[in-house]
Length: 398
Image 1 (cartoon, one colour):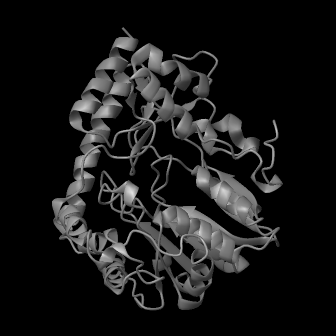
Image 2: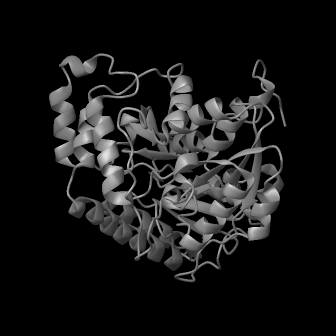
């Protein structure tokens, strides 16, 4: 690995992300960008209109450090409504600059140098960087993909791998469900095992649940904090970006027992301090939308998933259909004989005018071979964009 000058040792290897490379490739080639996971249509008017009305008022100035009382109250009510968990809006809810800051602040606040953090991989790329910035050590547990083109099959893990990942140096377990990049929804049985491991070792649990409402096919998201014994040692991270198609607003939050939230707030206040003044009342309005909104966005996204998955399969790309999130995973070995997903993604704009992301970047070095042949496509796009992408991919195989 080539060393980056000036960059601290703990961040060596965390250079420009593959998302930046692939997005630049999309612009340079005029390709359809199915790599980065952001919607290309506006969010609900009930949310956008509140933000527009707030701009030009005192909402443009610094909000309170923990977030506006209006938003913190809305978050607590939303979590109680959908997860049955009661949090005090004043002491157990913290507003952050997106889920990414909540996770980074949690690592900085809770992890001492040398502490180990257990994660399931493939793992969203910011996790490893956040742990590294805190001086922690990542302990990955690999997820195994199901056979592609097998509907209903899900990613799994070996319970022995999870138990073996925990050592006397382990401080916390960082769990993402619904899971990016695989689209896996951890089952109740799997979460019971996680709870058993966490409680037996006296760990803290940080759960990233930003895709909580984007679940398909009757799969059910269960917040681990609802399991017996976990609420008082769990920090639950959420965000309005995916739910309201406002990823650029960067409004996230963390909920948990007051001492845990206070610790994270201490780190967070020296990162952004505050953010998104006019957007906080807008997200508060969104969280209060009727149930039909939340079931509707999942139903619509599932339809888009089905369009893309069918198109990928028709193009000769065996695909793992996800239970949740924005992403479908493809096995490229049928069209890329050497199984090099990165090479496939770099060539795809010229071959088909479409950009994807190599899933191998979501594995740590020791397990990189597990994801080398996999590529991630996003389906959170308008109908006409998905239709054109499917048409282009189909011509590639013609």
